[in-house]
Amino acid sequence: MSSPLINALKVANNEQLSTAFWQATEAMQQQATQNGLTPERLDQLLSDED
Image 1 (cartoon, helix red, strand yellow):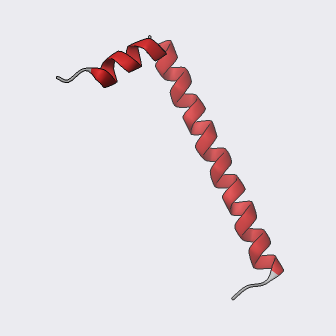
Image 2 (tube, rainbow, N blue to C red; image 1 turned 30 degrees about the horizontal axis):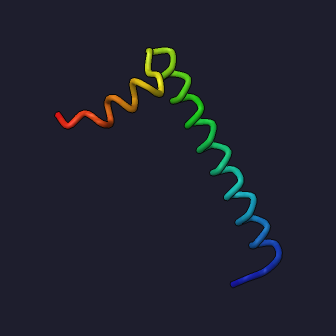
């Protein structure tokens, strides 16, 4: 079933999900930075073979 109203609701829902995703991502990034995780440290952690 396709209609302009359903399509508008789908777009609005996707925008809300996208906004929520990026807000959560930003919050995690801020928390990681506050806990001392730097890009260099992350690279080191990800490249360790242990």
